[in-house]
Structures are given as C-alpha cells and as structure tokens.
Image (spheres, rainbow, N blue to C red):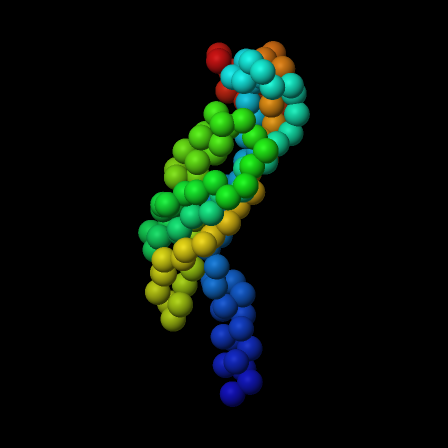
Length: 123
C-alpha cells in the first residue's frame, strides 16, 4: 500500500501542475518606449492552461513595466505552450496559473546585439 501512496505522490509532484515549455527573458529596445530609461521590469500574469497546453484568459496581476511591454507579455503568454496538469492519466484544464515575465529595456543598438538572448537581427 505504501508503494502506491509514494507512487501517487510522485505522480502528483511531476504531473500535478502545468509546466511551461519555454520561458525567455524579453529584451526590448528603448526606442519602443521613448520616455523610459534602460532597466529591468516585470509583468506578473495569471491565466488558464487548457488540456491541449494552450493558454487563455491572460490577465496582468501586477507590473512595473510600460503598457507596451505589458501588452507584448500578454500576447507572448497567449502563444506559449504548456505541458498540462494530469489527473488519473488525463490532461486537465488548470485556472489560476501564474507567471512572472522579466522585461529588460536596453539601448536600441543593444537590442540587436547577438550577445543578448533572443536577439533578432535586422530589426
């Protein structure tokens, strides 16, 4: 009986919550914000992960980032994919999933510096 209980606890720990498959830092050019100095900001969001791993109902809970960055984080969150929560071997919808996205605002020339993760040349 204890093997089954330990097995159940292990399954719950591994599959009891959705898992984001990719979590990048968002680097944005200062040009996007005209009024903001360089710096690091955050956007806390809450959402639902559906059984197919898609995200919906994204809401900003707290943030110190500019509005454009908050909007972009919400768009990125809707495109993200998660491994869903499982119960009894079945993928389940999970509400109230939270995430903090770091946002780093850099000088325009740094935004395309290949040393920055996620840099896209030619912007």
